[in-house]
Image: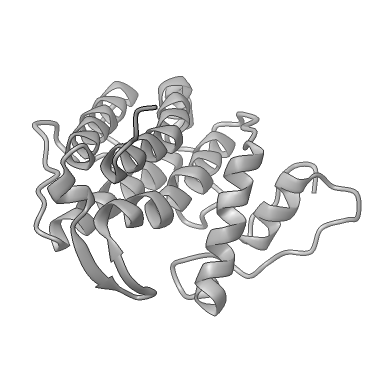
Length: 199
């Protein structure tokens, strides 16, 4: 049986999270980009810009250039939906190229929670963003986005790992209470300060 390398595993795990995010970006209607998202003060366009720039900045901090030939000013309302999607696709391709390189994915550093690698951080921390902000972008446009059990597991593990830092300024709003009987997605998102229509 063929063994996969740590780099292959990281690239596969990242793709599993990035693919559904890209699918939401691709199906967002043209009039959905400027609608308010569950992230207070941010439109769907702003959320996409945040996901893109945070990944790029993280990689740059560790010496890896994720720049592309597409302008990154996604948060400029003057840009069209086509522009925003093109910028995301170019960025996503570049990140996948970088993660396919063992020198990038396996690059070690001392993180907040101990020794780790760039690849593991992209999957764990930035993967959390890809899941929860996918829901934010979809919700801004009125799309009913369902998260899988594996994705909800990831969100719960991440929330557990963040501990009290989950509610630091700029991370998540305080947890919300929800009625008994709501589904798991509503409960997990409420823990992250987000209310679904069902809750």
